[in-house]
Image (cartoon, rainbow, N blue to C red; front, side, top):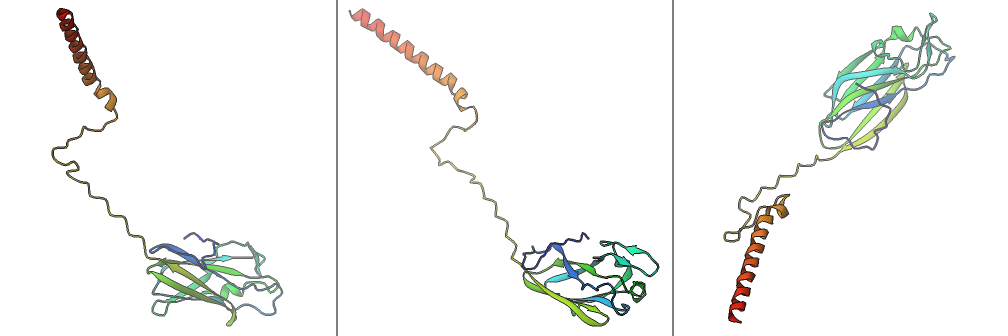
Length: 209
C-alpha cells in the first residue's frame, strides 16, 4: 500500500476502488511525566460500504529518542512494532504499539505516530469512519470522515448499424476520399459526345446553306 496524506473527508470514492483511511495520533510532548505503556488506534468503519484488506502501515511523525541512544527519524515505518486486531462483524480495527517498544522511549522524547488502513469500497452510498487514539488507556484524539460513492455510470449501448440505409430504387454512389478523380473519365466522355454533336450540327447547317 502507498500511504497518502490527502484528506478524503467529503470526497467521492468510486465503487470497487482501494483507498486509505489516515489516522493521526496525538502528540506526546517531550519531558512527559510517565512512561508510555499504551498508544493505540481504534478504528470504527462501516462494514456495509468498506472492506478491510488486511493491509495497514504505521509511521513515526516525529523524531523519537530511545533509552539506548538510538533515534528513530520521522517517517520511519513502525508497523513491525505494532499488532492488530480486527472484528469484521462490528467493523472495528484496533492497532496498538507493543508495550516493550513504548517502554524503550525516553521520557524527554516526544512521540507521535500515524496509521494508514487500506480499504476497498464495496457499496454505493455515504459512509462514515471514526477513529479514537488512546494513550495509556485514555482517549487522546479522535476524528470522523465521511465519503460518498455514487452509482457507476452505465456504458453507452453501441448504435446498431442500419443494414439497408438506402431505399430501394434510389441508389447512391459510394462515398470515398477520391470522389472527384473517380468521376473524371465519365466527365471526359460526356464532353467528347458533346463536341461530336456540335460538329454534326455544324455540317448540317453548311449543307442547308
